[in-house]
Image 1 (cartoon, one colour):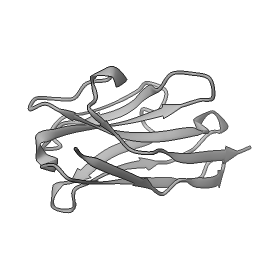
Image 2 (tube, rainbow, N blue to C red):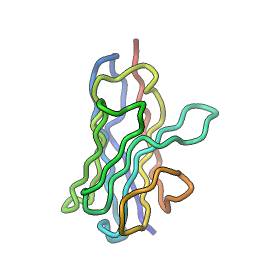
Image 3 (cartoon, rainbow, N blue to C red):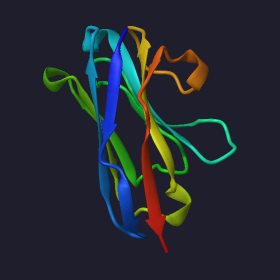
Image 4 (cartoon, rainbow, N blue to C red):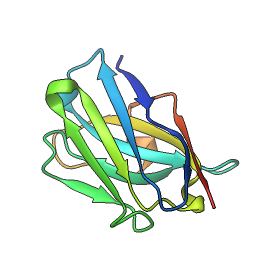
Length: 125
């Protein structure tokens, strides 16, 4: 079992920035691609960003491209999501997830093996 613990969420004004962190434990971190997803009330989780195990491949949803950046530090077992130029429509619960694969990353929630508990991000207008 892998445990994932997100932090860094909170309340921010539109145009502001937040950095989410997700610390992994319990499994070999470098065996997993990592993803960030978000969920609006009553909706399914949607892909925000993904990163391969070594950090060589990354991808971001069109809605956040140019504003959000995913990265990872394998020495710290941590994946990050830097969120800039935040908009009210970015308000959601953000989850990190781990997918045991050796190539690339995937963008469907069903393909991920482990999930964190989520962290709330609220952007005021």
